[in-house]
Length: 151
Image 1: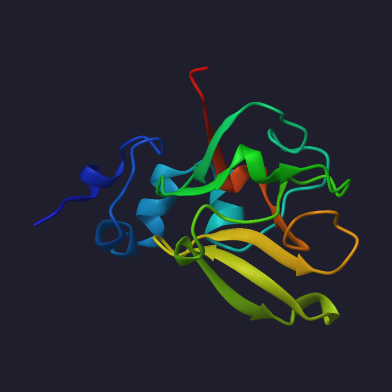
Image 2: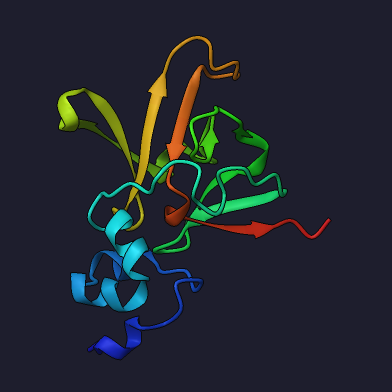
C-alpha cells in the first residue's frame, strides 16, 4: 500500500504513469506549488511574458513539471512573440494528449501530458509561424522544467 507521504517527493523526481495517474488532487497539491497546481491540474494559464521560460534560450530538454516526462527539446523552441514558451513539435507525439477546448468562446486544441494528464497549454496550426511543422505549441512555463544540456 502506498502512503500519502510517498507522493510528497520533489516534483523534479519523475513519476511512472501508473503512479502519476493514481495521485489524488490533495497529493498533487502537496507535490506542486499553488501556482503550478492551478495551471497543471486546473487548466489555468499564467500571464504572458511572466513565466520562467518564455524567453529562455538555454539548450536542453523541457519536461512536465508534474511528473517529469520529457516533452520538448530546446531545438524546437522558437520565439512566437506570444509571451509563452513556444515549440513546433514535441519530442514524441505519444507524450502529448490533444483535447478539443471550446472555452472562452473559441475552439482551440488543449495539450496535456500523456503520462499524468496535466494541462500544458494549447497547440495552434497555421501558416506564418515560420516553423517546419506550421504548429505552435504554446506552453505555460509553470507546466515545464528545463534540464539544461551539459555542453
